Image 1 (spheres, rainbow, N blue to C red):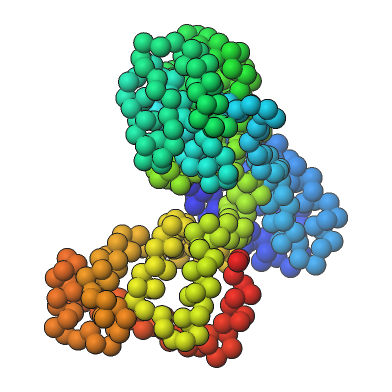
Image 2 (image 1 turned 90 degrees about the horizontal axis):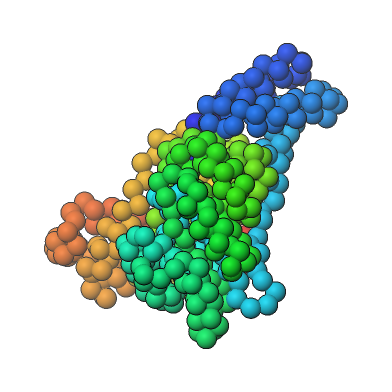
Amino acid sequence: MFDNLSDRLDSVFKKLKGHGTLTENNIEDGLKQVRLALLEADVNYKVAKNVISDIKARALGQEVMQSLTPGQQVIKIVNEEFTKMMGSTHQELNFSATGATAIMLVGLQGSGKTTTAGKLAHFLRKNGRKPYLVPVDVYRPAAIDQLTKLGKQMDVPVFASTTDMKPLKICQEAKLAARDLGCDTLLIDTAGRLHLDDALMAELEAIKTGINPAETLLVADAMTGQDAVNIAGEFDKRLDISGFVLTKMDGDARGGAALSIKAVTGKPLKFIGVGEKTTALEPFHPDRMASRILGMGDTLSFIEKAVEAVDRKEAQDLEKKFRKNQFTLDDFKNQMQQVRNMGSIKDLLGMLPGVNKKMLKDLNINDKEFTKIEAIINSMTPEERAKHAIIKASRKKRIALGSGTSVQDVNKLLKSYTQSMKMMKKFNKGGMKNLRGMLPF
């Protein structure tokens, strides 16, 4: 989402770092370009003006002018001010001290509330809570059906709402049902409208007054740009929003809403949706997002994804196989699956510091290749997976036919596998211990 902004800022900072010393004119010219880049990214113009003013005040002080590396100091200041603009620190969800916690999701129709409710249920259960999905959009039977299907897929209980029930009554009955089921968090998926209207707001106000939720989260579509920020302001006036969720942050929008929403409303952005899967919801960390935008990577998020995706015992078993050169094609497939669980390869590479953004943009990584690899390995016999050397021409033809691929695809996979084996042999000569020390488990 922030590729264009990152490219523009990278160009500005390269020029600044090219000067051994920086003058006031150098800095002012650079900051004009930064301001223009922010406006092009659809950042609120007042927010852009204020952040540039804050950066300029610091950049023209002794902090930069007397530094041995003035260009790096400017980047450091920009990073800190961008982080402050987006909220400084991640804001956790609030939970009730007693009884079940109610989290109310509000927003316009089509913003992604129902999908976000499912994603939040996955996130909460992963973090040890017992969510209960509550569909309150009685005007759209499809919304109730969608949430019911999501709950069934994730094995999360869903309140049996019907279109003839009153929204507040649903919430009140769901609270009692949650207690009986042992659920500690209600995720209330409210109705939306195509535009803001008094009827929608009055209904939401009645629900909020009736159940007193610990969180009232506005779900907004990041693709709508500054409209999302304007909508946020209107909802906040009537409902006193506690935070925001921006959906479709993996799209092609300019991303200004994510940068502006905290500065305009004073309320934190708590989560971002980064895909369609129920796992594609990330807690929003201003410092990490600033680092990504400035091309510094996001190592902490990368490690968190790795810890979540990699099974500790499997990793230890794999290390033993590395040492004994017993790494089979089955193991190779399992490793591929764990990498897939971490998300898009391109996104993961983008989290690593020092990765060239332009090269990454030109890099055509098709995540569907993993599916092809799995199909090829699944078409092999157990003996072939354990002893890849026996896979000769006739076997390759059979495997290609069985997996719906070509012999060239089979050869490509075997080449990748043998190259992995060679790398492991190098690690076995003293490198494995160092590698183990780098892993987050």
